[in-house]
Image 1 (cartoon, helix red, strand yellow):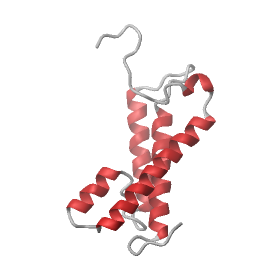
Image 2 (cartoon, helix red, strand yellow; image 1 turned 60 degrees about the vertical axis):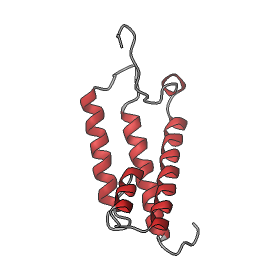
Image 3 (cartoon, helix red, strand yellow; image 1 turned 90 degrees about the vertical axis):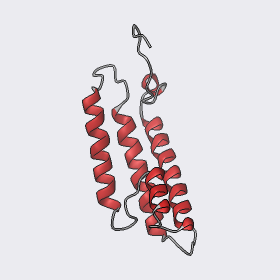
Image 4 (tube, rainbow, N blue to C red; image 1 turned 120 degrees about the vertical axis):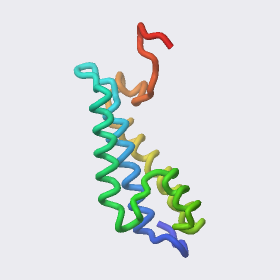
Length: 126
């Protein structure tokens, strides 16, 4: 990566990797597979397990933020510096994009069209 005075490259890579894994498994759990549509409980459990695993593997290296909102909260609470927060958010956004791109690349085309987006189903009112 690049040299920054504040955050270490290891911490930035940890945030990148953890956010990518979180998006990959979380969004992947919400995909509308024709053979077995996921339930809300299955999606919730997967997102929570992905969060727990991502935080567990990164908390010593980077603090396990995984989410720009958490990084912003740490910045507002004066727990991290502005350069570190900006670098973490950039790594998190890049990781989320990489996780979604990886998921997009490996799933079949007929499932790929929604990529886990929330929407009103057929026969449902708003």
